[in-house]
Image 1 (spheres, rainbow, N blue to C red):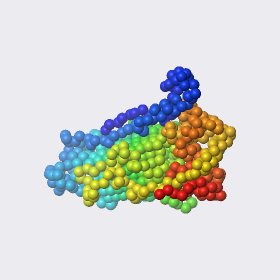
Image 2: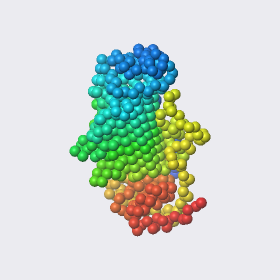
Image 3: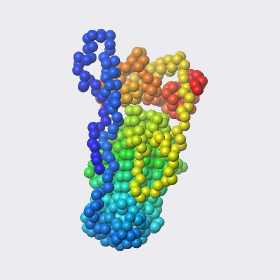
Image 4: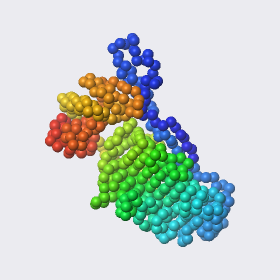
Amino acid sequence: MATHPSAPPRPFVNLRRFIPHSAFRIPHFPRLRASAVLWTLALAVHAGEPAKPPEIIERFAPVDTSKPDHVIGSGSPQSVTLEALQAALNKGGVIVFNTGGQPVTLTVTKTLNMSQRAKPTVIDGHHLVTLDGGGATRILEKEWKTELTVQRLRFQHARTEKEGAAIWNTNWDGRMSVIDCQFEDCKTTSKGPDIGGGAIRVTGQKNLIVSNCRFTGCEGSNGGAICTIGCQMTLVGCSFFNCRAFGSGGGADAGPNGQGGIGGAVYIDGVDQNADKKLLYVGDCHFKDNSAGAHAGAIFGYTRPNQDSVSVYYNTIFENSSVDKVEGYRGTHGGAIYSMYCHLHVVNCTFANNKSPSIGGAIFGAKLIDEHYANCEFYGNAPEFRGTGENVSLSRMAAPPAVAALGRLPGALDGPGTPKKTAAAAKPVAETLLAPERPAPPPKREASAEALAKFTAELRARAQAALAKSVRPRFTLASLKQDVEMLKAGDEQALIQMRGGGGKLDVEWKRFTHEDWRNLALALVDEDSPEDHARAAFFLLLTDKPDLARDHLDKARDKAAAVEAAFSAATP
């Protein structure tokens, strides 16, 4: 494992801190405004700076097991027994298997137990050992304050009633790492709040590390694959496919109807109670086709209030995750992610075709300390993402940001024992991602010069009216890649301030790009104003966002006709 703490991203740059006062006098060019200097320097500050979260954690290498304490088996699959494995677990230490190089499947009929008296333990299957619950049995449990690493093992067909069908800890405290493992068809069977974890359920671990693991078809009341309470959570290089939180009605706070259904793949309830660090980290992962009965189709990242916890999502793809539509229940939020009470960082991520019947088709955030989005793409989500950030696209980018950063699809990498799919003709990596195939972009629509002048003048007047009522629009100035707040708006220019107390800057309206006008229009939308929706639709169409524009056109009512009339016929 290599952890690389890096400086937190600085989206708000106070340029006056770094520029001598003499730079603002410009004695040899009296007609050149200081704002122009600031504009140029700001662009230089941001040029070439790749977006990064406050911390980056790499995949974990398997633990060295070349000097084992216990060797299970004597050179053939038949010599490997569960009784010998249990005897080794009673003592702890490094446990390996001698299968003669042949794969072996052990059907567990009585749960394997790591004793509280056992010393720190590593179980290494070297991609040859499968532990099978037979559709009836929990596979492995660890007792209080124990330290366990499982690696290069396959867990399948595990079953238990409430918590952790493949792996469970019996009591608070300890540590656990899961490296290069596969979990398939691991399920709990009972509904209820705060229970679940079809594959893994642990509480109070100082750090639960899951690296380069694949979870397929796992189910639990909450957290189809993983369910935790009070653990630092580190997920790196993992894949979660077709996992489900089958409960319903939400958490215990919902009363008797709160029977779970939270976190289709992963459920996290607090990262501070017994943790090394108050951190939820998800990096280099792939979530696809996961679902939940109540909220958080892919991952529920709840961090407790007043703890200054941090949640990071980095180089990760979320696609086709969903939350069920339940008649009479309105808490169905977060098609992919549900996040609360933290510093939220989302960098180099894709959110594609995720759905929630209520709020946040891609991400639902509640009572966040702050939130930062950078170099992310959102498309096909319902409802669609409406936030802002640095280089945030509401349509497909040329390649998913994680793929551009990693040079491959994120998620679990195949080990020597992983079943291989039939080989297909090689394609460039950007062409093999995220079915269905990326369609050709629709023809771009062009607005007449007269219409553009009319809508920009109306939007400028709308901003001035808002400021007169002490409402300061907050939006992303795309040309600066900065979140800003508008302080004043004149006929020729606007005074803006970098969000977070950064430098102030006079920006001439003529320097606004179409994306700047669009972001300003969206920031000023009053849901009950057809005029606001008409302006938002105009600038969305102008910047090739027809799907987003459609919603605003519907709400523009009789003003929609003027928007449609503003555009010429589509160009081929």
